[in-house]
Image 1 (spheres, rainbow over the protein chains, first blue to last red):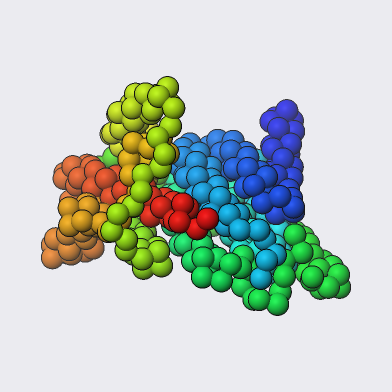
Image 2: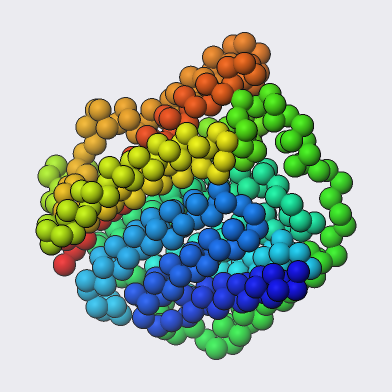
Length: 85
Length: 102
Length: 223
């Protein structure tokens, strides 16, 4: 029991850390990559919560499809230098 | 302390983190990231809290499953709006004076 | 630049909000309604053997119906914002090895999607996951330059995009005429759910893929 609790706490800490870094990292590309890492950690959390359906959907949609959309947008928005207006 | 409660608490912190991010961050892409973090926090609270006594609860799980699909659709729509704004004005923030500190 | 004072104030407010939420969670009394037991009690009449699928498409089917409507609206919104363009350009073709890998993987992914759809009745899986895998296959084919981006969706594509929602709506309407919205007769429930899920898989896969294909065609034009 205590080993699984320790794993849960570690996973929760990793979730918070990756979300924090995704929001605070200066480089937008790194931020999106960290957000994808956050999505994959979240998949583990769903597995721990006995929710394999959500884990499947999160891995395919949350980490995969959202990540692809965001990375594509980084490419499009980064084509001009930021702070130009 | 069950894993449900651990992840519900983590979800609460994620929700607050995303909320603060939406208020503080000007860059639209980061704001969309913060919005997604906020949503993930809400999903964790929904499932975690329902399962705080242990044992899977299919009702919140099904609702979160719909929520994830709606979240990606709203993310795509938000990205479309942000990209349109960028194409028309060259800006990546909403207001012209509010330059992004990042 | 955001003033430091505002930054500190917002972070403090968010931290105390999170703290209050966590304290409230620890204080919660035990739930008085036990939903898993209610789901378990009605599983026999649901037509499927997996509880999450039963909730998703039977007990709370109207949530799912409206959700597909929301997805369709989001796609229409993206179409409205990005505008209709006649001839989208394909991505520059990837290296031959990557293209071959994509050609090998795409049929396998379709197989996985159909398996997930079928398995959803008895174990984790279902239309959402299957649709997501289909969309991922389309994105893979697009990124390797095999599948071009979308211009204006033609009539056949439009019908396929709306098919999931329309089939779901037709079943709901037919059942409404018999009594209640989405109250399946237990004998036909399994078949009806599979029919709805098959439509949902195709439409969800196309909608999710469309969101990416519509957005990504802008990338080249903006430089």
